[in-house]
Length: 194
Image 1 (cartoon, helix red, strand yellow):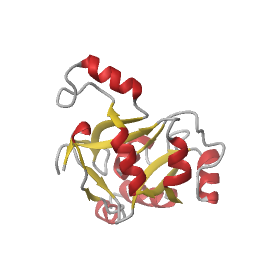
Image 2 (cartoon, rainbow, N blue to C red):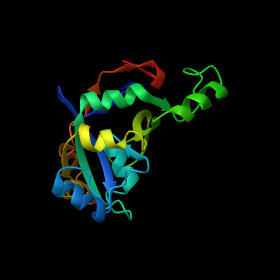
Image 3 (tube, rainbow, N blue to C red):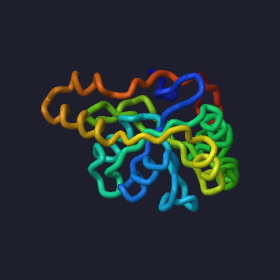
Image 4 (tube, one colour):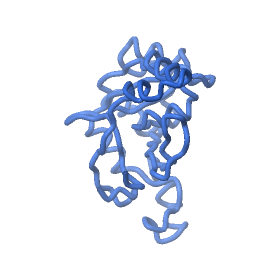
């Protein structure tokens, strides 16, 4: 595993990203197969292709406002369009000459990328990084209306995996994880050299 690479459940045309919401947002989205009110189109939404990163973030769907885990299948064209527009959330010296150059790019950006430590099934941080993509209000309409192919409620699966972990059945829990593999994509401006 490289330090900076995208690992995801993907096929030729689509990629699965994960989001956690309260039932008030998650249930209508699953029922409609797309994001509908009260989903907000006026604030940034973060999408993550790492299931285990979201499990660490949402406490296995137990944190308030994150009780429902959604698997959102979006088009690869949309995903790659977001990556092409993205700017890192920090002034990385391998990408920007200085903080001033980064600040100007970040101010104009409609998509943000942050690299956080990937997680093990037990939530421990790894050296490898996991990509988080922030979709701003300027792009969220494209995400919600054009990129989304399917929205699935993964909460029952999340609870099953977490229950197995609590019972000490780690091997069985790992067998149920979504199959994530390298998503080859070159984007030096995001530290992706694959």
